[in-house]
Length: 82
Image 1 (cartoon, helix red, strand yellow):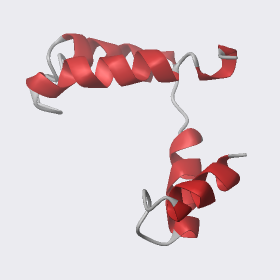
Image 2 (cartoon, rainbow, N blue to C red):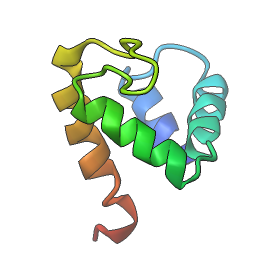
Image 3 (tube, one colour):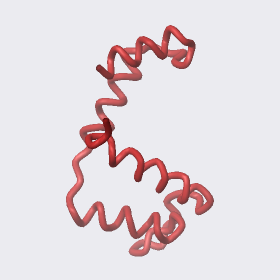
Image 4 (cartoon, rainbow, N blue to C red):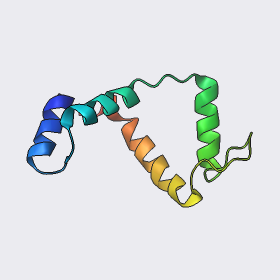
């Protein structure tokens, strides 16, 4: 289904590069493995406006945290939609 959507997006001009490369990257991102500690650190970093609470490193600009959280929230419902 994702492949069909990608080719439809290509037809509408929403994807301008090689569709197979885009799909490969998408599928890689779908299969990233994390454990509960990783998820907790990701959540803590986002809740801390992009600042990693352990290392003190700014992982992303704070102004983007709220947008990323919105995307994560809606994407996490993916399997339960429809």
